[in-house]
Amino acid sequence: MIIYAIYIVASITSSSPALKPNDPLPNVSIVIPAYNEELVIEKRLKNLAESYPKDKMEIIVSNDGSLDATKDVAQKALDVHSLNGMVITHERSGVNKAINRGIERSSNEIVVITGADGLFDKNTIPDLMTVLTSSDDIGAVSGDMITYAEGDTLFSKSESAYRSIYGRICTWESNLHSTYCFNGAVVAFKKKASSSLNTRRGADDASMALSVIRNGYKCKYVPSAKFYELVPHEFSEQRRQKIRRATRLLEATIFNRDVFSPKYGKFGMVVYPLRFLMFAVVPAAFFLSLILWTIVLASLNLLYGFAFIGLILVLVLVGNIRANIVSSFIIYQGYLLLGLFNMLRDVHIWEPNKRTGI
Image 1 (cartoon, one colour):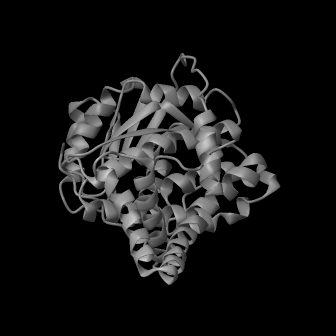
Image 2: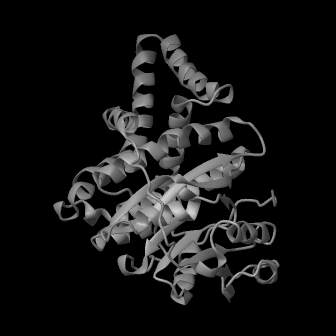
């Protein structure tokens, strides 16, 4: 309760500084890790062609051993939309390694990493560049994810409620020093500030940010830089996606625990410890407390125990009627707890969610 009270107060009181237009815009390399993305890659490249000046953009599609026509569709789209870029193909090895390979082939000092599923608007990359180039000590930036779903369910609504507060927390952390909870769908960084991603442990977005912070730079969240992403509305698909993300975020957090140090300023002494507690301690404590309260109440009267369990279920199901942070909180504690257990498995290659081409 203390940890989330801190975050709630922080999110309410945080605000983003006004952006001054960046002129001229810098040259950027855009790396897109792709595995079986034939349904969405053409639309993604068309969107990029409309999002940033073509003469200032290099696109590298890092084809991670796709079994479909991703390579051919991507190459055709690059040609049709007159984009400077290439498709590099390699054996299936996971998103982190695909990103590393794309970065190695890039020719610009600034690199943008983005997914094959989703869209930018005309301000996404320019706003990222404005913040990234505003100071020498800023090494990486990320934007704000706007989610939408094909269906209106408890699980798609929980994502909406979660995102409503997530960006504010990241903004507060950025104002304090840095945030490492980036949206992997849109991350931009300076090459001199980063290191290669660990190919077996950790989410690519969090691992990138932590490497930048470890190298003495700051990571900023840019709420005005929007990325629009289709999220699963079916429980099975959302569960798989969220457990995967929770596992990889926990890996990045726990395996970089040496950043809990005064050496990294307010990030090392405030931001990281709070996030560690949020991800690794609160979920276990939350469900343990539910079990203990059920036992205590049931020992007084069995009906009290059942009533308590019923109250928790009602709080979760209310999210199916109206998106709310309480329902979302309970659901996401479950995902984080399952992510903790999932860390016992050595899984660094994950299957992507279903693509629909929407």
